[in-house]
Length: 151
Image (cartoon, rainbow, N blue to C red; front, top):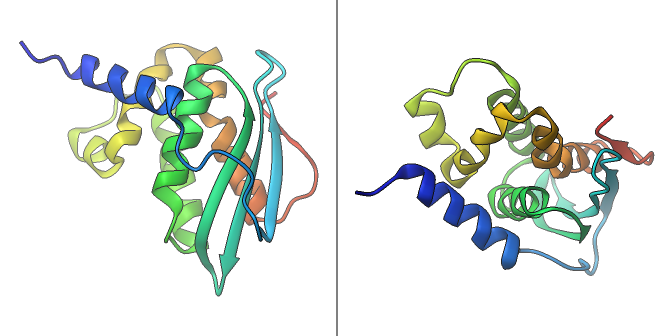
């Protein structure tokens, strides 16, 4: 029997082992650093934003499987989005992994592969791992120069 949890686990493992958009981004014009003091995850998100559009994005750093997978999936999702759409996606993701009520089927479908990370809701310490890249993305979009911390 096919189990949706198995698929979600496969997505997370795949993005953790083979992260997309990993490495230095030549020509970036926005950058932010993020740090999770609880577990030591640390990353940098770099963007190329032109005319309000996220043309390209990359990240580098060290982190657990959840942190790396979330950053990888995030980069896949925001390329080609406007700054406003990327910020809205951040808020949607943040809501889905932090609220008490489980997401609806429509919400999960809208989040595409990010739905794989909604299971972290049951583990508050892991929520910080899953959202680190997103908070760092938001800081880069807002051109904040102070490092983002999950604490």
